[in-house]
Image 1 (cartoon, rainbow, N blue to C red):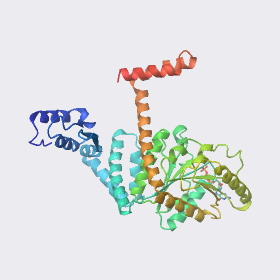
Image 2: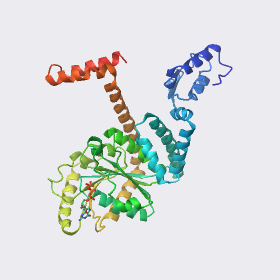
Image 3: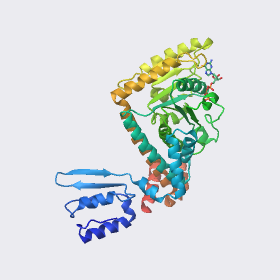
Image 4: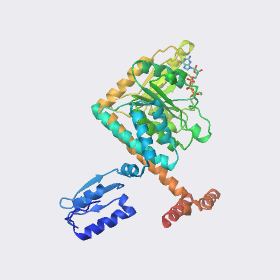
Length: 420
Ligand SMILES: Nc1nc2c(ncn2[C@@H]2O[C@H](COP(=O)(O)OP(=O)(O)OP(=O)(O)O)[C@@H](O)[C@H]2O)c(=O)[nH]1
């Protein structure tokens, strides 16, 4: 690094010293009154690879200017071997050219739990993000893709619907990707959504890409990779992204934090069959579609539709511009599906024009960041040697009533802090 000549010697030592410490990656606070040329010093440090952020204080008017830099990418890129660099370049080039094999390989990379591969995945993601931002600018600031969450209980008709709906979209010139989030595969090893026999025709369509759920990891891990897979699909030119979940667990709530619109598919069945559906999920829906509205099922489908129309009226409105709608569809006869797509586009348009879509996406970014922090911090806490060795005993004492949960938590936190 070049140190400007006008800086005095102490500053050179100071700067050189800092750049050798591990702290250089975190933060520096500069105060112009403390030393001459701090602005230059700050600028030099900001260009140093690996610095996460620096803060430059201007005391004259009390204004604090924050300069945030994400140079982690540079740091990773510098450390890549030729082979790794070639892999990232190959995946990036193939992905943005729309090659499905490269998209698939890129998603496998973000799903990897191997630490080096995770780093490579982040380098690739940064490149794709930069590409997406460019494309968005060319698109006059409009989002590249319509992100839609789709959920429903097992047997609601999700795969039959996606097959029909997906073919309709590709025939109209759209590129569709279907990503599955299936928490059952995390806990039991089995997968409700992952089997390849679903959506056979759509999976042969060159303008559709179907990705089964990752088969390992916590729900948090699965949602993280789904979030990243969405970005990769957008880089690959997919303009409609369906994120599918089984409407029985927590995954729907996670999915609502990564999509623009959340759709609930419900079969024309009575209350008992729908008990598994959590009330909260209905509240999250922007559109409820009653499936299988054909033949003998038209009558019960109408009844369920009326029930949900009344139920939704009682719910608190989540958007200033959109009221959730209840429609009836049949993937067998095709009825209602074009109208459903029209409703979806109407939703996207009003949300875009009102600015709610941009606000929602911004909020989601923040939620996503904090979810990741929360997950990592808890993991760090649990595996910390001083904590790990005390957990079994303290848990036992809490269970037997010998210790209050609050005290046990305090003791563990104390152990964590003392040896940190
Ligand atoms: N009558 C009628 N039956 C349908 C329709 N759509 C799906 N079905 C039937 O409903 C059953 C379940 O459909 P799927 O599409 O497999 O449902 P799913 O929600 O994907 O189910 P999981 O894969 O278990 O989550 C199948 O027997 C389908 O033939 C429809 O529009 N009309």
